[in-house]
Image (tube, rainbow, N blue to C red):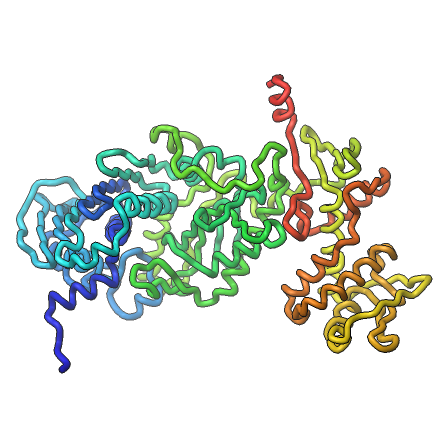
Length: 590
């Protein structure tokens, strides 16, 4: 038998699509507060949000004639017709949040607009309005949610412990606070202040306030624009990485989201800079035309879809690579190379937030206001601007390697140089690996490979399987500058090698290259080819090889011409540095 469900049952089922745990309620209510242009938002929870949630804001409030309608399904002030779905400039727009929350909890709302005296007080139990009366209250809205899932007890067993639910809410509120530095946020858990921000507009100070001030020395500014789209924020130096992606924060058009597209772009930006299994810390703010992104692909708007994900991925990759090309990306000698944990809460008092003037001034609230007006005026061709931090350039300054003074070599492995008031240690093996890798890869990609003739041609033998695939790997070697051809059964002869390599280097490379072919890489796949070249760069100068002054100078000049001189192809650092101040501090002189 097929029957139409009772409205209360249907509402409870629909509520489950939006409200699955306390964090969902906090997210929806806070986003509504932000859409209401609130400048101050306080969130209070008890029992991990299962017992009590209260969100108070100083936003525009709800007019008394719309107070009850706001709790109806599909009731919203954020969109008017179908075309608005193509360019959504607000956070909450579905018109389901309040109705869904009220369907599975006891809810009280107190609200007042600027022109309205008094305000209104509503009480809703399980979706039924039980009270609607006037009340004196300041401008803004306060919504209190008690006894979550009291009428759907089966769902309670799927919730985490009180601490588990509290951690989810704290993490989410931390991320929203970063996205809206101009809004004062306060989070209270069980009567205890978890954190508060000053709403000063200082994003860097908010990052340090929430995640710890020790993080500052390991962050690099990102500032990149392409075709009007903007990416700004901060990423960690390669010397700081974690074993998970838990410290990767993405904000797109003012919305805190999960995005595989941005994640892939970030990962590509760090390619060859981190070991496999390590992940960077990132706080990225992205601005794109609203009509180029779909925020309506997930019931709770946790995920978004870009119309052209590859363009966004490439933009993120290039923006991050530019940030990592700065001389500041070099690791300090006293840096912890693999930090696995980062403090989630700073120890400084809340009053310290906003006292400095550093950081990207990302005024997302005003961006969204402009965004909404643009939707009405011109159908969303406008791209919201993210103000640039003073002193941060789109073109970060590279380390001037050729100007370094060579001081000496330690243990026949580490080259000591100085530049201005900083000392650098350079791993000669990692440096030469980087030079060889980029030299061969550049020649492969450019298909312009100057060669030099060997006095004695080189011969080598390969396996039958490798020989059978010669139409794949021989063209690859030829593009790098090798003159190679078959010379009998599974035998090949090399008469010319890349001009950038010495004869011994060229021979060691080609022998390792064909040996690695036995792992059956797909050379037609550029990523596989890169890995093959990377593994084959074993002819590089080794630790313990004694270099003369002229050889060191030549190595530094070649390293300076590399796109990424700061790490070897495997992700190991080429440089570490120590400033004059750090040296003097070690000797108690500072």
